[in-house]
Length: 315
Ligand SMILES: Nc1nc2c(ncn2[C@@H]2O[C@H](COP(=O)(O)OP(=O)(O)OP(=O)(O)O)[C@@H](O)[C@H]2O)c(=O)[nH]1
Ligand SMILES: [Mg+2]
Image 1 (spheres, rainbow, N blue to C red):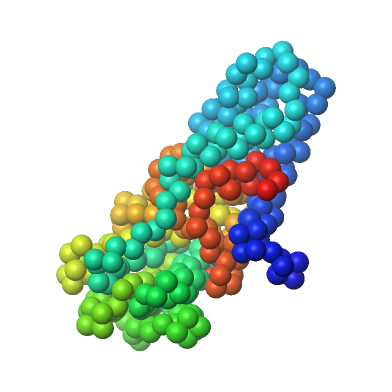
Image 2: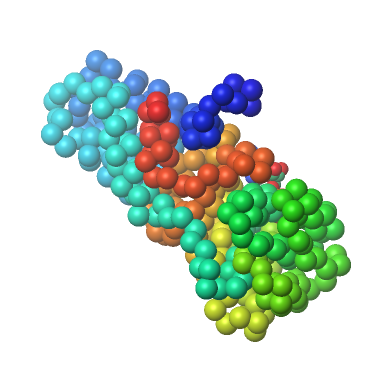
């Protein structure tokens, strides 16, 4: 932290992102540099570049496209690692640009209901804390709902975030029904003129049908109070899980109608490339990325910064 205190918030955030993605970008960069030295570009080199990109979790179609773009007009010529990195950044940015969208709060919905879902430990509760801070700092009235009724510690954890961000928390007893908690919270939020209601949910594995059905019930019950809600369903994904994120998106999208993604833990993983594969495949909006455990460690997702960080281009 100390060496970043002098930086502007933007630079410090960029540094954390590019440091976090360093394991992805440096293994990619080293491999590319090894490949291109003292060789002229040929099909075999492009295949090798494709392999490097696949190992960085970018996904097959993006890897093929980047290799093709590298090859275009460069056969039988020497090529530098920097040239390859530039092509990687350009092609990755093309995939990410259409999905990099801010989370828009419709002020006409009172409250604007955000349901936060994801597998165990992905960073849901922490992300809610960070979002609560952000919305409150924009002058909105925020309320949190402790819809993870499964564990007592989960309720406590949300209450701590509530205190830290001076936000009311609606919670029930441990083991109570999470759908009725959501119902009560939304009813209270309406009565109190709340602008944004953030609903936490218990972590659940995407292949456990019973738990996924419970999530469906939460959505159904919320609609009894407001048939336009939830207005956003955020799927929180842990970047460190790599390829498993693909089946998480599929299952949660099917069950809860995910409207946008938040990817956490990008501050320390070699697997950040998975966000590119996800964007290519599902084209769901990516709203935020988590780059640390603190309240301010949530950044809006920007395609160009992320693409350059992945490619290992210095800011
Ligand atoms: N480094 C880092 N850690 C994070 C980030 N987001 C969350 N964490 C940490 O990940 C752990 C799990 O976070 P939680 O917010 O409790 O995750 P959850 O999805 O609510 O977990 P369950 O409720 O158990 O399903 C905590 O130790 C967080 O501090 C992030 O962006 N970067
Ligand atoms: Mg939680």
